[in-house]
Length: 328
Image 1 (tube, rainbow, N blue to C red):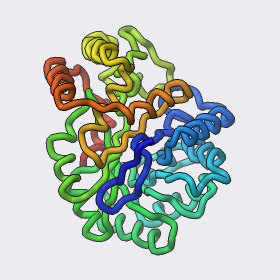
Image 2 (image 1 turned 45 degrees about the horizontal axis):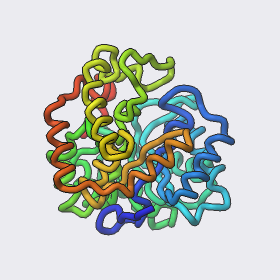
Image 3 (image 1 turned 90 degrees about the horizontal axis):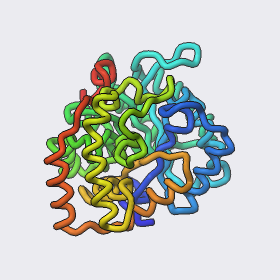
């Protein structure tokens, strides 16, 4: 596994990380802990060192399973988790980045993860009611106490990142980025490059769609997040399938899979990008990791980009409620 540095002053991690969201949220029922542990151990065997989770995944169960999986192996990995929501009776409430909530929920994350420090602590979503300077000041205090190593933000806009960094440097930004969501290329990626901030794209495989696993007419379980995403409506699945067919044809011509081409394309955009695909299949895990070894020539990248430009994507990436919480 190749490694990359997340930004100018961030950690050196595996070129492909692992998103743990599917352990206890996202695509149906929660995994048995034993299966989640096996997948994490397999990822480590393949060279993965960056594992991404969050308080709201479950809630809480996700962090618990990752903590169990990394018991006795903590010094070999980098753990990223997130704060930024309130919880009522164990259920996620509104965004909340008040200092007292950050502190209390981070302490709970440390307990669940069975560790005394978090490598990358993200603000999950910007809280419009709490100044970013106040948020960053709290994270700075946690850093001084040895409980947090690097500060990250998720789905944040440039103004919010700059406000936070005026108090304590933002080292990593996590946002959606893939062949079918390229908005970060316009302003975010140039900004991150100038500021020396690393980028961790989630959903680099389009929540499974770019792999070809979600075929037109697919239906999702009641608790699958994709049920509420416009891009996955029956109508848009059919429209967007044309892109998948083109990716698959390109991949077959180059002796690999659609998922590997999708990941390799992301990795080739900037050297400070570390995608975090998630899977519960050890076969798919090995496939994702192998994508880090695929070298795409300038001509091949040109062909892919022309293909993407010629195949517009239908449907928003979030519903209206979700869109209100991104890029503040």
